Length: 186
Length: 186
DNA sequence: AAGTACGTACAGAAAAAACTGAACGTACAG
DNA sequence: CTGTACGTTCAGTTTTTTCTGTACGTACTT
Image (cartoon, rainbow over all chains, first blue to last red; front, side, top):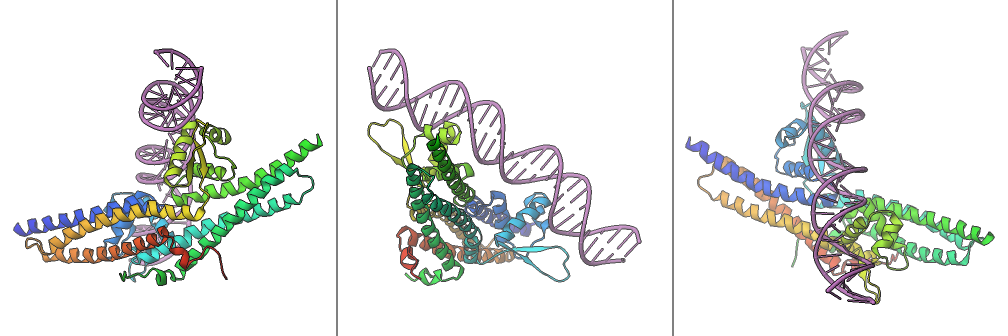
């Protein structure tokens, strides 16, 4: 009886401490472009010793298995969780990626890189069109003036995206850690 | 008649070129945590020579003035647009921030810094509680083992957040440009 | 070959977010 | 002081997103 109370007391404190952290993570994970509940799942996985199955997640969070399935997929795409193989276990097992630096890096490598590519693609295409306009006899000088201004803007933007790409390179190659070391030496 | 056609032709081409870029920006601006339509507003502002009023934006995008007002506010918070003062003009004027590097930096300084702070706060609080538990006689060894594992995880996380803070520091101070120069020298 | 356990596609329901128009407060003009 | 122009608040509507249960396909078991 006494022992049970002891256990319950500590268990609850532990739960409170974890829940606070999980809540904080869930609230801020939108920086990675995912919803609170996906963040809650991720936070929960963080504190699990063992990889979890979809059914265990469903149980723990009180949500549908469908939701667990799609949420895990999102987290997999972001490389925030890993699929774990364990012989003899039929169910899929997942665990939270525990290298947070890598998670940060992957986010840029996956999401930002894609965004940059898309913007660069559009801008180069438009830039080519605008340059053609400049040399087009049939277009009025007034419009050409506008086109020239747009060209300047796009060239500036492309310069920025070149920087951003180099920035992501430095993350992907881990060179960034030469500049900002993992351990604080101050 | 001929002149009009000339103008129309070029104007349309210009419009197509711009629209492509604006679309791309709108599609990718979710990286900054804002919606497509806010991105569309931002993209539109980019190509404007002069600062715009809310009424002009409303006109240009065919949306309500209310939307323009709230969208601009969001963009102001992210420092992606600036309020412009012009004497004699009663209406508020806004223009897109044209230093994209700064926009990138501000995003981290504003959003990521806040997220980090919140997580660190929660983690330190929980960490203190867990450490107290470790020395609590009334708590079972089993629970203490779990607490110890959590403590390790939180300490690792705090180390990561310290790195992330230093990372944002290097952006805010512009030191990052010593490591990754704006101009590509290769 | 039949049965069972599993993950996921899909359609509909529930919840959340974006958008709008009307009403309001403020500032300036006359 | 009154009237007008402006930006914003707020409540309601529309649109989008998230969530769920059912149905399905696959793979393993017996």
